[in-house]
Image (cartoon, rainbow, N blue to C red; front, side, top):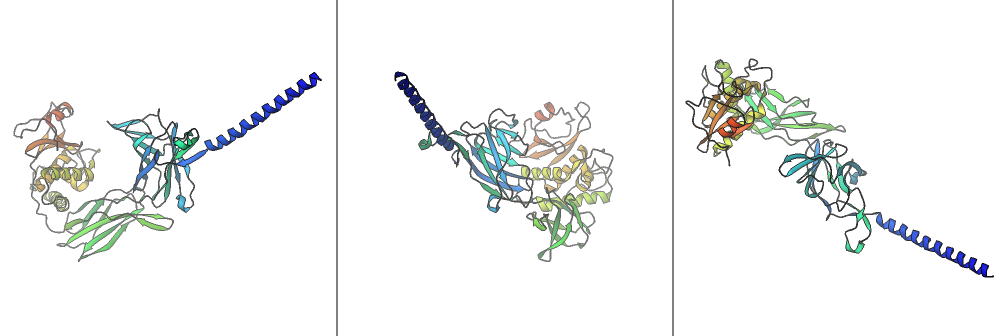
Length: 439
């Protein structure tokens, strides 16, 4: 009887233990369900603003406070969520421990694991108030939705849910990338009959459309049906008249064309140029250029002044405008100075290729036309590159070094001598500032 009683006690104990384990399992299951909570919370993860100015990328600024999540995931849908798209992970960023590239003192960049998205941060971490994510895989005319997510579940920071786990997601944005507006860089004539145009490349464009302003109205002129062809000529222009031109990019998406905005208009007058400068044979713009080539240089310079130099511009703004124009319209002549007048202003301004001498002579022509005191300078035998040539320009009452070919803008002699290793004969030249220009 005693043995039976003891056996019943043991069975009762086992039954009680099973009940307890069952209850614990049920509670664990309930808690597990709670741990699977997914919540949008812009306090900890918020896409603040976005931009879609380039067909090949969309960028958006975000706040990310990871609360212990190991990774930050970028999700994207195509088509957009509102059009039935499903958000799928596009890329993933390790919050701490990834290799970041230093952009400057307070700017870092890092690619995600899939190499599709770049993150820019004020510190080497995918966490902070001012992150920027750039999707480099988008296509013009397509609509996308984006969302940021924690990769892990973390302790819920909300007081009423404290102890539960949560996976926080950001708000969802929808963006449609557009074609970048081309810039009409050059609008000139070399014979007062044909107008030549050149513009910047637009990524993913199938071609370009050109418009002309004549007789008080804008009208379509012609199309360039190749995305990598960046020049055109108007052979219907008439001598003596003034025209304006604009260009836009287009791309065919699903049988329909989408268009960029039109570029800023450029003006040209088909008359003999009158811009100031030395356009006689033996000119500093090209000592062996004949009068025909010098006239073409003058025509381009005339167009530059007409379209870029405005009344009331400061000397600094004029020099910067000429500097940027030259760098945008001319590339380095790797074949050598002896090809296509690459050591003259004609090579730089008309043909669009030059070496350092061509850049310096062209800069001199642009400055002369704009009323900027400018000198042409040649290195001497003591320089790190004895054949190098550049300019000196006067801005704000002082003289500075300017080298458009190597992107040296308003440098002092300390920088030019110590960092670039330059040396030159200063006889007959004004004394340059020792320090770089400061606005």
